[in-house]
Image (cartoon, one colour):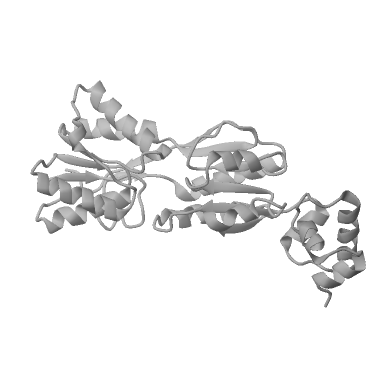
Length: 320
């Protein structure tokens, strides 16, 4: 079997030069690059997908990058992405921040779908181009070859809070998510705007910090029970925090919704088990649509317009 040392010897170059060529680095001259690739092709040397994509100039591999393994809705998104890509002849690589940057360079992939706040905008802008478009699902990036596919948080949260007010609630508590995230910002803005539009005051002391995890919801609810300042209803920026809050409230002998109502956002897998009133987001469909938008960009038929996915309120037993 021909190896990289054999290719280097036949081409009259070093092993590191061959490695640079097959990994798409630009520190090799055109003639040398073409000679190495020609020998690789003649000898049937295909070390990995990168080598294949370099020779063809194209790749049907798509990268999906995410970082938070606790959020089970990722599985629905991945299935939606994979289904569309499979139907259209594309392969999918699922990876995390630490490894994904390698897959987003060197012509390994033809595009990427990003759901990871740890991957900053500057990096995305630096790698996005006509040959490597990107779809982001957790933010808005106004840049060529980057398209945002996001949830319409603001409108549905306004409707949600208005419905709660119409049910007679006026004393609200709120557990927020990671404050730099678009989901948190839009959901909290909708929450406060709707209260203001109804002349309902909201004290900052009734705002509790969270990070979208169940543990942060549990801690916040424990603080609420210790403060002896129980609101009528606790609105949480996602389901994980709402479920953590419900556990803490029950441990302190409070009944939901008799003593306090609780709501979430996302309609995670466990939400139905807890009877959680929430906002349901079509996660499978959002993944499917993100993949569709990316493929259209790859094929030159897409655009950079922001794509917003609608969501619906799901009423269950944690609200009276």
